[in-house]
Amino acid sequence: MRILLVEDDQSLGQAVLGYLKSKQFSVDWAENLQQARAFVATMHYAAVLLDLNLPDGEGLGLLPHLNSSIFNADERPTVIVVTARDQVSDRIRGLDAGADDYLVKPYDPEELLARLRAIERRRGAQISSVLRSGGVAIDLARESVRKDLVPVVLTPKEWALLRVLASRPEQVFTRERLQEALYQWDDSSDSNTLEVFISRLRRKLGSSLIETVRGTGYRLVAR
Image (cartoon, rainbow, N blue to C red):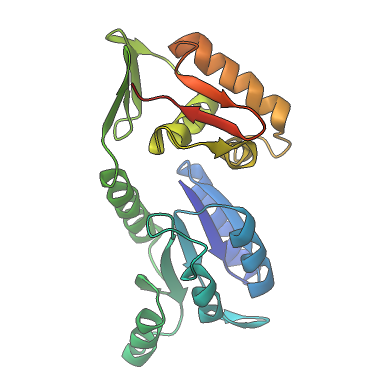
C-alpha cells in the first residue's frame, strides 16, 4: 500500500518514514503543500497522513484537490489528519473539510499502523478476494498465488506488480502506473525494469495472463 506522508518536522518525518517502511509500506514524504500537490498529481495513494501546520499553508488546503473529480470514488486516498491540535472544534473542522480520520500527536505508532491496516482491509473488501483466470488463482487478501492448484512463489517486486494488475482485471494500466509499484523497491525503475518483471510473471503464471496493450501498457486478462 502506497502512502503519502505530509509532515514538515524533520525528526518526526524521518521516524514515521522509517517505521512505515519497516512495516512494508511504500511511502513518499512531502514537507509542504506544494510538494504534496505534486506527489498527488503523479502518484496513486491509498492513504495520506496530513499534518495541519505546514510552512506554506494549512494542510487542509490539500483536501479540495483530493476531493476533486480527477479521482474516481474508489481511487480517492483515505486522509488521516495527524496533528498536535487536540480541540474538538479542530477535529470537527478537519472532518467537515473532507478528512476521513484524525490522530492527535503524540501518538503510538502501533495505533497508526492499526488504522492503516484497517484501510488495507476496507480496500481489499472492495474487490473480490480471489481472482481466477484460467488455471491461475490470485488471492489478494492472503497475497498468495496458485497455478493449477500448485502454489507459486513470487518475489516482493513480482507480487507488487501483480497486485496492481489484479486489482482491476481487464483494466489497462499505463507503464507509468505500473512502474510506481516497483518504485518502492528501486528508485531507478524504468520501462526496461517493468518489462523484465512482466516477463517473469508470464513465465511463472502463463504467457496469456498479462496482455500487452501496444502504446499504452498492460492488463490482466480475466477469463
